[in-house]
Length: 622
Image 1 (cartoon, helix red, strand yellow):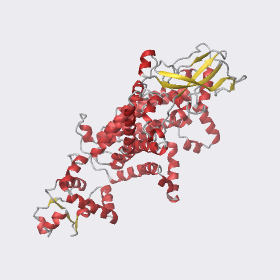
Image 2 (tube, one colour):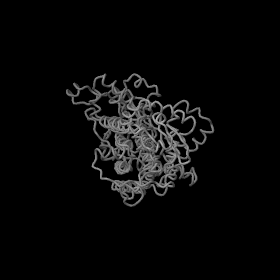
Image 3 (cartoon, one colour):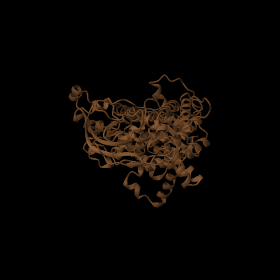
């Protein structure tokens, strides 16, 4: 390959191609004496680079670049090069090559900005090393948080007992079908001891990943264990960060290095694995952005969403309270910035190095601001951790004291093929998720939709390829449920929650990365009619279940459970700064009426070990 040695753009790309072909192609400047011996004129040399193959075949320009890369020992590079030689693709490449050739100086500057000054192949072993350890940290937080609540939520005396769910499924389905539809180890044992023991095992495995001990088997067990809880947790383990953790966890298993103490790993992650992580970053943010546009919600269209968001966030923080009082111009600007970042920013994920680093910085800043103004469990942390795949080892080395690692050897073809076979279904499902968000996706031919539907049906129980779209419709009001108990039906005492908005003088608190799942579900329940789990929650209060009461901040009936419980609905609004200073109140509220009328335990024997039977009472003392 003869190229213009005075062209900075040409020198940079020749360095990249030389690394890709690993000595199988000799790259020489156009001034080399061998050009004259091969009969390549100066006019042809000035027009485009020239390739001479052993067969004597001459090619130039874009075709020469693609043909040179077909000599690479790496089969993905060869496949990509042969695709570039297809007639339509090659025609477009020739036009692009001509434009660059006529503006080489500007192209060199743009290339240096996009890709950085270095032209060596990028490695991701340090990125993977940091990502996997942080994944261990996220899993540790998730299992620690769940362990504090698991019995109150899905224990035998909890709100939604896992044992009852599995017993109903066992009667309705065959053994093979139930494992396929609800993959969980708790088919073997769903006792309270097993539920608690599973969280402790999860903490131990997460520590192993955090310390770099047997990461691949430990991550596989963590993924299976968390899937087991998600399969029986129903509403309480169906948040977007739960399914995101499962999706990140499955990809982590596929990319983790082998061995007991692999360190950086002998080989780096494959290009397809890196692409799959970046596709997940794209889907996470683009899904949230495009769902806001497609929802038709006026608050997003009119750029007023942030004016409502801080006041109506499920579990606000003090930072959210103060942000709510920012000027309206700032609120409109921040709403527009969020839309732009979530709709346009994700496309930077697939651009060269510098735009990807800008996207990483913007996404990380967005997650930090969200964490400062609302409690979203471990979502902000895991989203920032996922964003590491927008960087490379050289970028990490600029901010962290990373030791020099030995160069990663070339992956054997069979490992690349095996990795491709494993991750290809995930790539297809992830790409289909993006495409099906648009009207054209719904008009795909039946021969395409049928296999996609089958593949999605196989993956659905694993909860590891999901659709994301947070706050597509902004809540503009804040109804809150206050649960009360009474011994006589006239004097009522409120049950205090740990983190949910309740007393008007209770300041918003910072609870993340802990995920108080009952408090979160109370926010969702207030937006609709009473769900089944809420009635079960009231029944457990009438029983005085210690596991359920442990989810609350206190018990106003310590001696014996109340005879009746009810739920009252209030409308909450944040006080302004002057009122806050004058009264000490963070909220003002207005009673809207009963959410659930008084309930009591039904007379007669109650079912053993199950949610008790209830009876409705006429409301008194309103």
